[in-house]
Amino acid sequence: MNKLLFANFARLRKSKIFWLCAIIMFGFGVFLSVNTYYDAKAFKYKACLDDIFFTYAPLIGIICSVFISLFLGTEYSDRTMRNKLIIGRTRSTIYFSNLIVNIAATVVICLFYIAAICTFGIPLIGVFQSDASIIAEYLFGTFMMIISFCAIFTLIGMLIQNKALIAIINVILAFALIIISSAVIDSLQLNVETYPEYTHTNHSAENDIEYSDDGSSPPDKFIIKGVKLDIYEFLIDFLPMGQAIQYRYRIANEPYKMPLYSLGITIVTTGIGIFVFRKKNIR
Image (cartoon, rainbow, N blue to C red; front, side):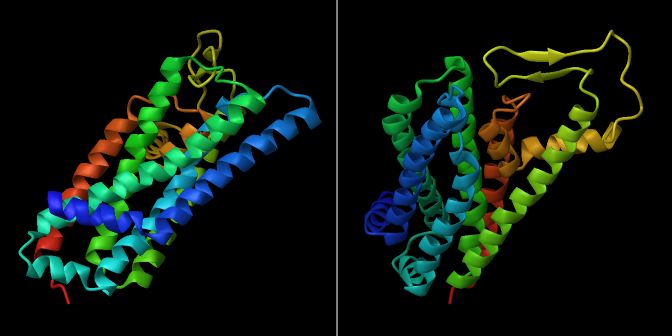
């Protein structure tokens, strides 16, 4: 395992797609900091770091899908995967070493964005307004979310030998998750906006904001209710991109659940990936 990790990290340092993704994330962080500063001046409102810090959450899902697809696809196109098997490396260690490197690379790419936000955002728009405990909880949650993204895209990348096909499937999957998660969240927000007098708590604000009625039961007029409402709420907490959107806009009502879902996704997809990869015929 150690030799495989060393070889993968050595390849990562020379990977053009890795450095390109890192530069894109850093540049996006710089742009967002400067743009927010000038917007705040132009429209005369007070910006804070909270508004832009977690913007990386949805974006990193797309970046991750592109990076992992091309990075793993090269293993097959250059016959590196077959060579690892020929010299006696087990399929499980190959899978785990690739997953670990993918996670590490994606986290580093994400840290490039955070470095840009801290370097340019703090001097321009100030520090966090939310409690440190909330920021720490969201940070932990986003990194668990990144691990689940990597597990999903690694599963696809390890089981398909065509680099172009890996990229197509992973990128389409990333955008499909965005569309599905956005649609579910929009539907739930419409529920709340239509009947705002009933209890809704926003844990992302500096102080919890709660609206409640006079104690009577909610009416049957809700657009989404019952089992359907439970399914929708589960989906936005379970899907990695649903988590990402909630982290981005700081609208997670129960953020403690999402890292557990991410862990479950990681374990299940990795288990499936190793099981299938062991039986796969490598050309």
